[in-house]
Image (cartoon, rainbow, N blue to C red):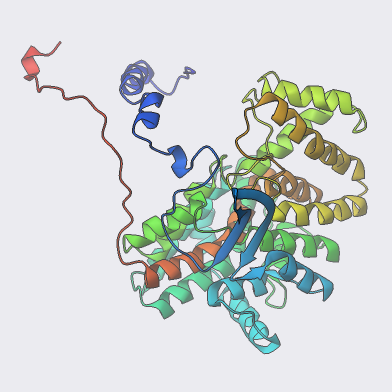
Length: 455
């Protein structure tokens, strides 16, 4: 392991760390011997079924007489195909995130009056407690905005007189308030970090109750509060596509697990935030952007397919970028042939790149999306298909929107809190037991030795 100097106690810490490592690694062969599915998934990507949900449906294969056959990926929110949902609000030239939140929480599509009323409710709740920004958000700022948002969420518990009340109307109220305020918490935390850690001017705008969630994000973030209609609509699209993705993703499953213990809403949401911040989950889009930036430094033209292919091969051989052996943004735990969210997103990403005069950058992504599938197939033993996932394009879109990298994962959370809320309510109403999966103990018996006889 890498050696760093933490404090005067560093040598002792490393001695203890070496001891912990020695006694904390499970022999990989034991997983096969006891037929334990690591990550709760088999080699084909099929997950262990641990619950039921009506909130969203993911389709990645079809049952045939020959068994399950991979198919084009599909995603449904409460039974509504995500493609139909997106095409519906995009065709009508309106914002869709608030509609998607309503659908996820309540299981039905709102009519015009119901949607307007819900948008008003969200706008009314998009206010923080008096002096909260000064007393909480501006204290102990740091570059990891996810940590700052999690701290703010936990602190909001102290401002809620009914924080522990698990009655559904109260939980729904808490969830709607958090959905409304996550954009404010994230952007304010970034502005505070930018001011106190980087010495930039402090600019904190108030939300506009007449604007959509996506419009308010851009208004809060930009000093002049300006944005184009296409920018706001594509950010809105990103929020819709990230809002929910089944009960089995890490952060949503975390929400189910923590909710099943009977804890409060703020703790459950903070736990999900801490899960999402991991680079294997919500932080992947940052790695995609950084990888593509590195690619462009080494390959001067998006038309040089041979050079791009060579770079991708070196990625897998741990000879390029971060030497992790990964092509970030390629492959998904569930989807094989295609990720429906990525399929939708890439079209609008191309449209935004044209508006920004940066179509050349999109061309690099298009080439990698095509070539990586072949390169991975040649270099890796693939048990299921591989294709670009939504993270592959979301980093590009956020970059085109001029969003800072520090906010890439927080904006994922700004969207996904809608899905977490729906799953929390579902777990409270349908779950009856604390979630406690089994772990098989494989430690060998060890006798107790009196202290004076050890050595």
